[in-house]
Image (cartoon, rainbow, N blue to C red):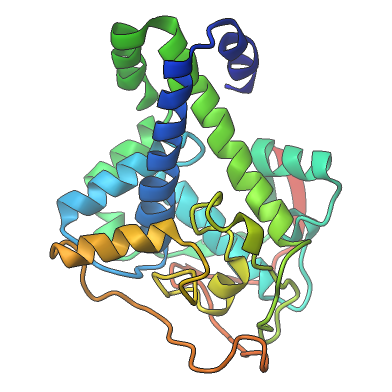
Length: 284
C-alpha cells in the first residue's frame, strides 16, 4: 500500500482525487476507527442500534490495518502491558522512530504465555464481525471498483492506496508522539507508561491525540475534557445522541482543574484476562 501510494499517487495526482482521499480518510478514521472500533467496540463507551454499530465498525475496517477482533486483541494487550510496573519497548514506543515504525506497522509480538481473551457474547457471536475479520483487506475491492468507475486510476490510488498508507501512518505517529511530547496532567496508578495529550494536534488526530485523558478515563466516550480540546469523535457521538441513535453514553466529568493533582486510576481492559508474559518481537 505504501509503495502504491508513493508511486501510483505521484503518477496519477489530481485535485479531485486528493479531495476524495482527505474525505475518506476523515470518515474512516473518525467515524470508523475512533468512534466505531475504539470507543464503541473496544470500550463499550455508548450504545446504538446494531445496524449502526455494524456500519461504524465496517468503516473502521476500511482503515485497512486490522479486523474487529485483531483490533480488540492489540488494544487490550497494549493497555494491559502499559499498566504493569515494567513494559516492553514494543508497547512503550521507546525505540527510535524507524524501529518503532517498523515494529508497530510490520511486526507482531510473540508471548511465551499468551493472554486469555474472552469476548462478550454479542461480539463473539456476531457473524458480521467474523466475516469482516476474515475478509478485512478484501473489503477494499468493491470501493476500488467504484472509484475506478467514477474517477479512473487516480481515484483508485488516492482513494485506496494513499488513504490506507496515510491512515496507518497517522495512527502510528499519533501513538509515537503521545509517548514523548505534550501534557500529562494525570498519573496512572502502578503504570510503567504515561501517555500525553497532544494539545496542538487535537483536531488533526480527530480526538485520538488526548491520550493522557483516555489513559486516565478509558471507558469515557469523550476523550476531551473541555471545549478547548477538539474531539471530532465526541462531536459525532453527541450528534447521534441528539437524533436518538446513541444512548447510555459514558462520560467523565472532571470538577477540578486538570493540573491541580494527579488522578490515580487502576483499570484493566475488559475483554482480556492477562497473565505476566515474557516477550519478544517477531515479524508478522
